[in-house]
Image (cartoon, rainbow, N blue to C red; front, side):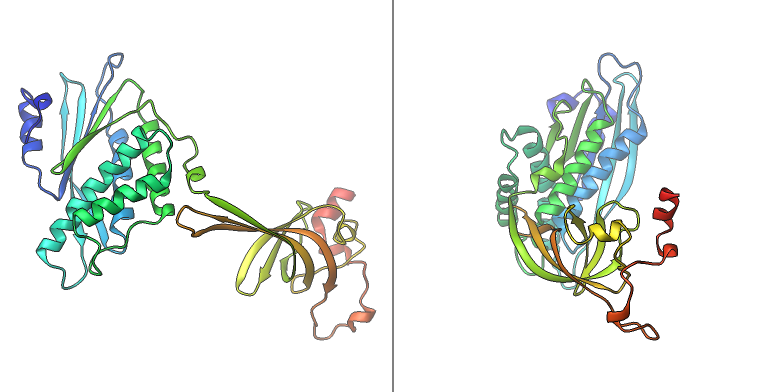
Length: 320
């Protein structure tokens, strides 16, 4: 049904009246101080945010948008884009299931917008709960449909919305129309760093005893070492006051393939649904350096602690 606000705008009213569950319209109206309508690249940013939201909500089901029409109304100084979504559902999915999915994607996207602009606390758990309710109400929680989006996927979509908002002036007017409801963006509300929404808990395991293989020593003197623990590669930070000080003074030879037995602080950050967001190691103490066996070299006991000068080109040039 066409809203009262679109009455008298024959082209736009006809466009909105033809929407199906597969369609949505993005409308941007220039603010009072602007002389011209918003430009197409600004609507493309909105399209990217909608695309990120649909993909987060669709999970493993492929989602692709095509542009049906672009309408510019010079008198109103508005630009509208009509999009149609194609969902490539799994084999055997029914038409009713596809219809439920489309309703869920549209309503879920509107819920993301409503949460961004209306939540007083911006707790990601509140948005996740709203999406769960929508999933239950539109019957998309069966095994034939996508799992609910993770915290990371939701935050990526939220970040895309912030980029879209940044393309407009705060006095502009941006709306989204779907066959399942509409929403107006509050362009004055911004989330400066959406990644901070993810952090729910941080745990630190102090002074863990671990052995790391050195993939790349810190030849640049940045205190960052590229290390490997099993199949996991990580960048570890080395505080001053450890045995590695000898490396920086060129009194200790450490090469790729050698290992460090260390005391480390192991910091793990978790998201709202308890997924691991990041892991970080900080070297507190070097217990011993474990040289790798290299064919054709002298035994480890005879290996010089002083590295060859050519192994440290950056340090050599800095000291010369």
